[in-house]
Amino acid sequence: MKLHEHELIGQHYELAVVEEDRERTKEHFEEAKRGSAQSYEIKVADKLGHIYYLDITNTPIIIDGEVTGVHGIARDRTEQRKNETQLKVLESGIEASVNGVAMYEAKKRGGNSWLWYESKLDERLSFHVALRTQIQEALQHEQFELFYQPIMTAAGMS
Image (tube, rainbow, N blue to C red; front, side):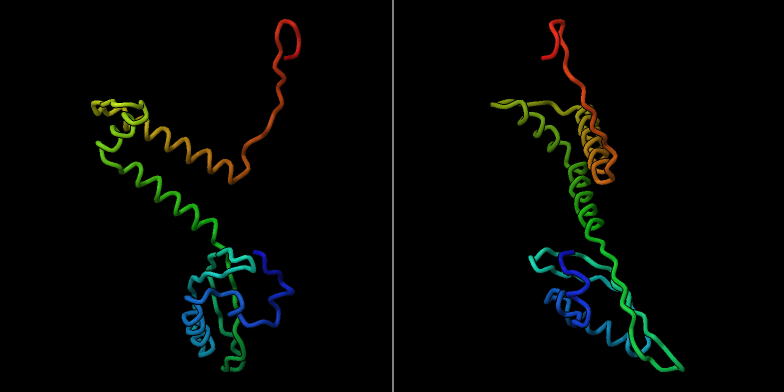
């Protein structure tokens, strides 16, 4: 996040919580102050307005049976939310109607074309969706390596 620790220490939590989540955040915090641990999700914004999704856990600090404070723990789940959104888009593509798959293939051919639906269209679509998903996951986990391979001809380097 673009907010640094030194910018947050001593500041009220509302500094970063988006407007729509402030009241709910306050309610959960108040419940924690009454002794009940809380878990919930909120959105926060950095100085540039980028939105981050956080899982929040508020745990009351109880000393001699009295709540003396609240521990707040935040876990950034922005990447997970992005991945869930991408997965929904991919799933909706897979669930596209038989006609949708055939129309896509006909459109790809260009012009005034038509195409009879065949089950191999689904297989090809499924293969491409699976391949795209695997490539995206590999990119996210930095599983690609770059190798340099010069192209040689009989006359030498090209």
